[in-house]
Amino acid sequence: MRRFNITLILCLMASFSVFAQKPIKDLKPTVILISLDGFRYDYLEKFKPKVLNELAKKGVRAKWMIPSFPTKTFPNHYTIATGLYPENHGIIENNIYDFGVVFGLDKRPEVQNSRWWLGEPIWVTAEKQNQRAASYFFPGTETAIQGIRPTYWKEYNGKSPNDLRVDTVLSWLDLPVEKRPTILTLYFSDIDDAGHEFSPDAEETRYAVLEVDDNLKRLVDGLKRRKIFGKANLIIVSDHGMAAVNRNNSIFLDDIFDIEKATERVLWTGEIVQIFPKVNQETKIITALKSQIKHATCWSKSEIPERYHYRSSPRIAPIICSADEGWVLTNHKRFDEWRERDELRGLRGSHGYDNTLESMRATFIAHGSSFKSNFVSEPLCKLLETKTANPSRRFPNIPSS
Ligand code: AMP
Ligand code: ZN
Ligand code: ZN
Image 1 (tube, helix red, strand yellow):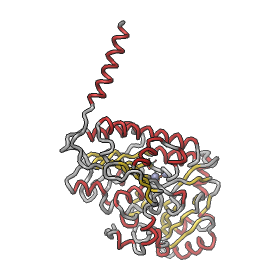
Image 2 (tube, protein in one colour; image 1 turned 90 degrees about the vertical axis):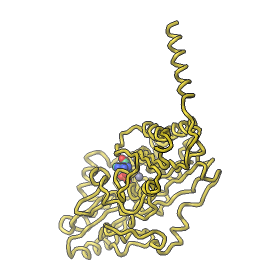
Image 3 (cartoon, rainbow, N blue to C red; image 1 turned 45 degrees about the vertical axis):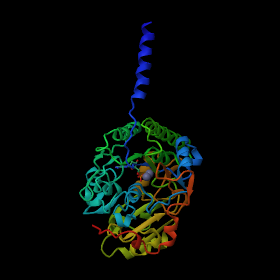
Image 4 (tube, rainbow, N blue to C red; image 1 turned 60 degrees about the horizontal axis):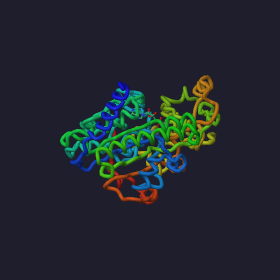
């Protein structure tokens, strides 16, 4: 009897709390920008996440989205936020050399230092127009850009549970209209993490996609309970795709030139390497690279093909090497460390390669009152990529540091 009473009370409380959810009747035009890091364009069909497919079917989907070069996380998120190429917005890689220091994803004081972030991200535009912006993570939101931050923001912590991220975004929408943000961001890294660790074709990556799909269900259900699903505009993007990589396919730059002797510094990733030569060493290094390198392309900065839009920033290194898909640029020290950590076995995943590769294609889905229904667009922004000879005509030239 006693147990029955408690169960009854709990049931009543649960149903009461559902009914207690106040509908939002005074929603202004609102955008929730959701980034699914590393969600390759074909994961929708390949892994069949239910909620994402439903949103894509009922709303708008691009066949794919072409990321900017290099196909890395920080450059592409900030391109999505500003509409600028990395050479114009300043975040030219996940690692950047400027001001005598190296910027990196885990260098908190630098990520939170406004000097790196050029251009104007969408949340700054919103705040300038007396709207409020809120961010549960998005590169660039942890600092004041042009002196302006989102009203609500979070310091990045990859361990923050995804459901907490969703619930916090919903709680921001529950604020009274004068305090409620009209542009909100959400970010999930799990799909990228699984893609790197297990490869884009792995079951583990499928499960990561399906788990993030559950997080999105929580968001959609929350919007439905507030009676604003269909009204609020969801824009779901990814920053790049993912390619299968075996680290045994390594290209050793220290077999081609003496890195220690000839360079001031080298900023490494497996897919793109930034080389800063010592005085009078540039010609020697580029000549050696061009004649000997296999499975990668190296350029002097002035020779980087126009289509990459990757020349004009003073932050771009004098020499850039870009690996072919599935290959890894490295030196013997880094390779030996991978061996010691048992990271040479099996397939992994990577991105950072040529942005026109199929494996690097990103995702674009949109759903809400401002978007068409049942519409599939041609790839974004294929037309611009192929037809625009001079990118500076389209995008304002932002003064660089
Ligand atoms: P990438 O090396 O390009 O694969 O970067 C992906 C990683 O970026 C993810 O695993 C995240 O942990 C990290 N990341 C994403 N957003 C942020 C941020 N705002 N601050 C610091 N790290 C981030
Ligand atoms: Zn990424
Ligand atoms: Zn990644």
